[in-house]
Length: 334
Image (cartoon, rainbow, N blue to C red; front, side):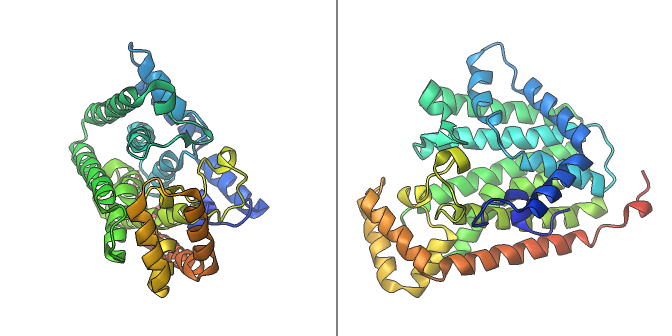
């Protein structure tokens, strides 16, 4: 299992993954390769609809080269906890389907143009189709988990989707706000990002009751680290040449008026930067290109990036520590 957020997601690294990191990821994938292939097939089935624009719009995102982090975590955690229930494949596929639903909705809210190096589905099919396809993905996810007959999985997924929605609303409502509030920031990323990763890590509560809390803790901590790594990506920390490599333009979150951790930390240390950011937020979105470039430059010149990376690494260490509570595989009675 991973000991660093960047080993799975890599966005906080300033350069391409090393041979060691690539080998580690390949090893993780190899451990569950057969299950991953089954989850990919299940995902395609779940996206099927006689209304052909639905699989077209959803598949435009889902099969555009995503990392499959959530299915991979679900299946690795299933193996670590001795979960052999065939429904683990459905949980893994649903993790990606739920993520796809949030991306379809986010791109409409944020007026995004590119995702994973391709035009967003809303650009190709329109905002209405994108939103309704996201609704379809949510509904299909609920249907698929309900059909497993595992009430704990259904209840935990319903709670997860509710908290994800709360996180998205809290972020949208607070966009461009004046407060430098790390507690509010942590609440947002817990709900909009970490809670789904935690659900996948619990294998949708298919894991034994005594293993669910360590797996949940692992997923929550990894989710924090992953989101902070994504925040760093917004400042071009990875050597990206454009949306074709990372799928995200540097300063994209900033232009949308979103407080991310490097920005928060930089503004805490520089009251003038804080004032300038608030003025820019008041004038947008979208933020003027020259203004966004200047703020990005000043954040990169501050200690905000280094501090944010250190916080991400602490969450990654806590995630690894959570797994130590799991029994050795040899003690799990399957």
